[in-house]
Every structure is written in structure tokens, then in C-alpha cells.
Length: 458
Image (tube, rainbow, N blue to C red; front, top):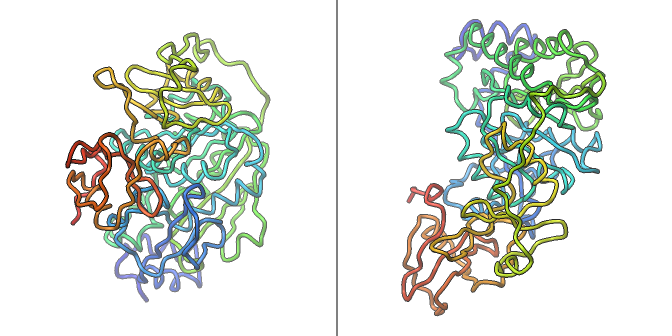
């Protein structure tokens, strides 16, 4: 019996939940954690991985956990380190045909960005994703991961879920990957298992119910509410789904094809399937997910929710001004907009949404920042180097070997290149993938990689 690392209350609940499987479960938590990544479909040429995650097209298991910090491809946005179990979200998007038309989507508790980047890879390119994080200190990680992923159709916000009451019945999908007690991560952090308390779990469930109540009005009737946690207990999963049925009008629920849920436990609450991924049954950590459709009919927003002002700080650039940014290649439907000293690429749908949320939500960034204005000069901004809009041949390109790539990522400014590059902005690449810009001046390469993202590890 392998239960010495767990509180007696937690062990008792697991035995009630799993019965004869409980010893297999406890043994699985003593095993080595599984490492998995999800590739960026826009930044891959030839796949070198051979052990796929069965429910995710671009998900792969790794035999060992490398030092990702020292892999330049990781910093280029070629892949994201993500827990395999949470990639099951993909099956809901694909099986429910949610990628076939433009949708407005809210990722309510988004940092560090695993599910937001996954959604951007899956949804229709004209969909709009609002990626929200309520805790301010967690926002920078969300910004970094979404910028590196390189997609243009998102807005990052820093708001409490209650603030989305202003978005009256806007969203076709709301994803709530709720803050939870984290039982599903005990294999990665065994020490936290000894802090398990029923009271803490009940507090998490109360917070989860508040988050749902605060954001429910923002979902369209007929819209899909996807609820997930990285925990096992029934209080935060079955109990919260029951709370939804008891307090809101539910039109139905979404189920997955049995072929795609092999090894995944399915529990039903009021006909709603709850999918529980357990580490003794699948290759991954603990994760629970369910999806319900909102009932009711479209209603008129209250006067307090109606937006009256337009975001006048966004100035659309003229065709002549746009041509000055030779490093930007815009697809149809996208234009450049200036806000203060920054220039962004956005499509009309994104601008429309940004205009409407401007007064009620704190938007951190939106679209792709392509340039900034310094001392009257327009210079390329780092996010464009990671985006689909970058015109690579607008700059001299410097392909970096592994050691030089790490030097660049550390913010260093001197390199011993055999080729003499012209003064001015150059694009640094690793294996053909852009890392960012440098500005060469004689023998110095002034490093424009964001200071907050620079690696400290040697």
C-alpha cells in the first residue's frame, strides 16, 4: 500500500472514488511524471517526434524531460510544453465542429496560455479569442506564450470574471479551466499532497461556482461552456456540474466519441458526461473536463452593459503609411492601427471587439504589435518577429548555431560571425525559425530580445 505520502482524508476519498483501482492509482503517483509537448502547426517543417498523444494531433510524449530553457526552438514558439491530459480539449473542438466557422471565444482563466494557444491552433482563423487572466502577476507569462505562438486573432485581458458581465451574451464558447486544489499534479509535486484538506477543497469549489456565476451572462444561449480542473475529487467536479444544473438553464451537454476516450473514465451527472483522466489509466497527469450548452433565449442587455464609447485611440494607418513598414506582410482583411507609440496589425472583427470591451475590460494587448515609434523613427517590434505577418526577406537573416542562439537569448551583444552583416536591423534565426531582432552597429549587435524574457541559466 503506497499511501504514506498522502493525508488519510485524501486516501479515504480516493478509495471511495476508485474502489479496487485505488492501489494502482497510488502506485502511479510514485512513478516518473510524463513529459509532453504540443507543436505549433504554423512553425513546423518536418516532425522529429514519434510518440503521439492519442487525442491531440500535434501532441507528443518525450522519453525524457530536457532542459527546455536551453532549447532555442522552445523560445522561437516551435512548441509549448503542455500536460498531455489537458490536450483532450482538442476533441471537443473537433468533434463538435467548432472549427468550421468564426466564433468568439473566452478563455476565462488562461495563464500560462497552454489552452489559449491550443484554441488558436484549432479555431477558424477569423475567430476571436479573449484570453483572460485575473491575477496580474500571471499575465506576463500569458503574453509571452501567446506572442511566441504567433497567431494574430486574440486579445489578452486582466480582469475578474465578474467584469465580463458587460459582454452580454457575446461568447459562443467559454472555457473555464478553473483554479483548483491541484490533486492531478501530485505526481509532479508530491509535497503538496500532504497539505490536502477537505476545507481547502470546499473553498476551491466555492470559488469555482462564483467564477461560473460571474461569467454565465457572457455566454450566448446555445453557447458551449467547457469546465475543467486538474483535480479528481467530486466536490470540485461532479458537485460543480450539479451546481450548474441546479442554478442555470442548461440546454444539453456535449459528449465525445467512445473511440477517442479509451482509458478515460466517464461519469454522468444529470445526463452530462464528465471525463476524468487518471494517471493509472492513461499517459498523463490528472485532469477532469465537461461541456454543457446554455439554455434560454437571446435577451436584451441591460443599459449598464451597453457600450457607448468607441476606442478612439486606435488610428488606422493609410496605405502610404502602411508601405513604410516593409517588414509586414498583411493578408486580406488586416490593417495597421496606431495606438500611442505602437502599431498593431488587426482585422475588422478584432477591432470591433476591442472597441466594445475598451471601457469595461483592461486589455493588455491585442493582435500583433508590428512596430514601435522611438525618437520619431518607426522600428520593428519583437512580436512581429514571431508572427505570421513577418516578411523575413526585409532584413538580413542571421542563422545562429546553438551556442550563439543562447547568447542572443541571454541578451548578449557581441558575436564572432564569419560573415560581415550590414549595419541596421537583422533577424536572428535558429533552424530557420525567427528568435527576434538585433540592430548591428559596427562590431556590436544591439540586442532587441525582450529583457524580461532573457534566459539566466548557463
